[in-house]
Amino acid sequence: VAKEKRLPCALYSHQQNRYSLLRLSLMSELCGAIERGELVLHYQPKLDLKLQRITGVECLVRWQHPVHGLIFPDDFIPLAEQTGNIRYLTLWAIRTALAQCARWRQQGMELMMAVNISSVDLQDPALIGNVADALAASGLTADSLWLEVTESAVMHDIDKAVELLGGLRQRGVRLAIDDYGTGYSSMAQLKRLPVQEMKIDKSFVMDLTHNEDDAIIVRSTIELGHNMGLSLVAEGVESEEIIQLLSRYGCDIAQGYWIARPMAAEAFEHWWRQRMSE
Ligand code: C2E
Ligand code: CA
Ligand code: CA
Ligand code: CA
Image 1 (spheres, rainbow, N blue to C red):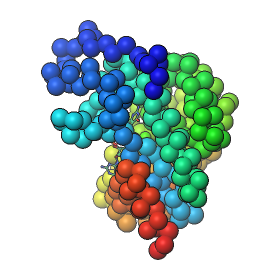
Image 2 (tube, rainbow, N blue to C red; image 1 turned 90 degrees about the vertical axis):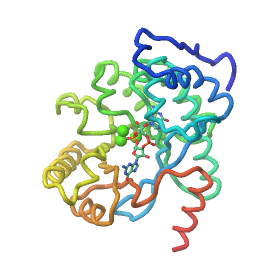
Image 3 (cartoon, rainbow, N blue to C red; image 1 turned 45 degrees about the horizontal axis):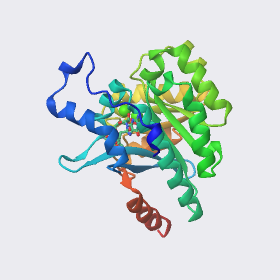
Image 4 (tube, rainbow, N blue to C red; image 1 turned 180 degrees about the vertical axis):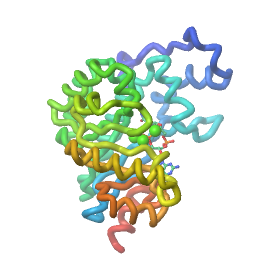
């Protein structure tokens, strides 16, 4: 990554006293971590329930820290959002994931790539041009890329979100609303979003076969989404029974440990070949 693209690594925020010393030191290290290649993307497949085929992957970032070992995103994404460094991480993730996707296509692995973006990214109009540049560099068409944004991130500033997502959509990028059901959006707000996919939060899916309330929520969310013309994804699918139930409800896509955990690129290739030969 070019030096001039580097964002200032602000170590102190007015809320710094909320963080432990470990977290503070992680926050100050994050910029350098990207340059030192300590961040890696893992890939989790998405299973199309009707086609019974893997149609795409979602990339999920991990930090291979030289001292603390493997750190999961929940432990550093919020910090990166506080400091604004998330914009740097997001761009790195989009570029890296698209490059991987292009290599896989050359090997005959026809997959779409999904990348998570944060509420901070939604405030940054430069994202649209940056995404277009990353697509051009990868040689992939815009419809190869899904950007996932959480329901709560969108609701944070809905007018700005609608504008930015609209710009991305105009360029042909596909958009998904993530963690649906946890962000208190109204139907009127939902209707304004130019998204094509709705991902039902895993908290409603994981216990689906044992919890009647969850079953009702999932079923009606699928119906709502379909009525709005969206494709429905259930995340957190941890059993065969849940897959069966989701299929009966008409859910389009499933993602979860029962299908596969997020894997490093090489492990994913191995998993894919094995699955293809079955
Ligand atoms: P998410 O986007 O909702 O991603 C799904 C999370 O659920 C991932 O956790 C995934 O590993 C986990 N998961 C997948 N299947 C199952 C399952 O069957 N059961 C259970 N219990 N969990 C499952 P992970 O990788 O720790 O990521 C956590 C969150 O961090 C993500 O939630 C996303 O919001 C954020 N994140 C991850 N990578 C990025 C990134 O590159 N950029 C941004 N902005 N956020 C990211
Ligand atoms: Ca996601
Ligand atoms: Ca999610
Ligand atoms: Ca989440």
